[in-house]
Length: 353
Image (cartoon, rainbow, N blue to C red; front, side, top):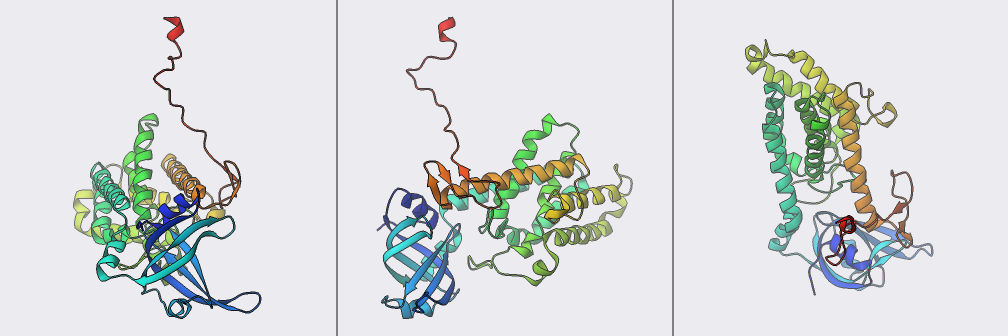
């Protein structure tokens, strides 16, 4: 039986039941009761980029074994998977077994395609940082990725809404940089050095708010993230790194234009304003072109990712129509297919020749 990821199984199950094996970490095993007070165990299972819930009824042969699982457990789930309109991905006629150490290690590395994408995204981030002309912003970004790069690479961009997977922040950051570099020639008033640095640091506080442990797919909770939040942590991080670099580069930075203090304040503004409105958690509204651009680039990438994920996970209501995925504003409708002219079709202006 083919070994697949949860995402691959979810896609395949949209067309009907699929028999497969999947390697997962157990996020939790919670004892629960039905309305009739029959006990069952609810397993939350995760791999590198998706999650599913498995309900183990008390009369299942594996009920006792499943009830003793913890988030240190890594298992293979084998069965027939189907997509339920209410409960999402479900498994029938299933069995489990523990993973071998080699299988666990391979699972933690993520599927080859995702691993290659995130490695390429990380390399793109490093290359984008190297193009920053302002030595202060370049040094700040380089110090950040040097000191916290490994933590960065295993952080999610969010807990639920978008890029909610190990390494998701790297994907989100790289894509935002691509958008920024694509629109920069169209808006020459933008300070691209500042915008790229703002993208690097805008979600840097999520290294505490949404980080994964080195050896699993369970997103831990961090007291700093809970008490302060990622925007405040990002502001504190930039100030801390800036003070350290200022000591070593004070003389070199003294006569640069624009003044170093202006650079620091404008970068802090991008971090503080990137949610766009105070009602959404930003302490200040965007007040510069770079801050406004960063806010909309962030929103664009996050929301297009929500559409892509929603088509896989949202409940179908009709042909091409899906249940609303929060915080998108309404029900999802499948995109219009991209036009592709066949070889037999004439070009629009052929009749004019």
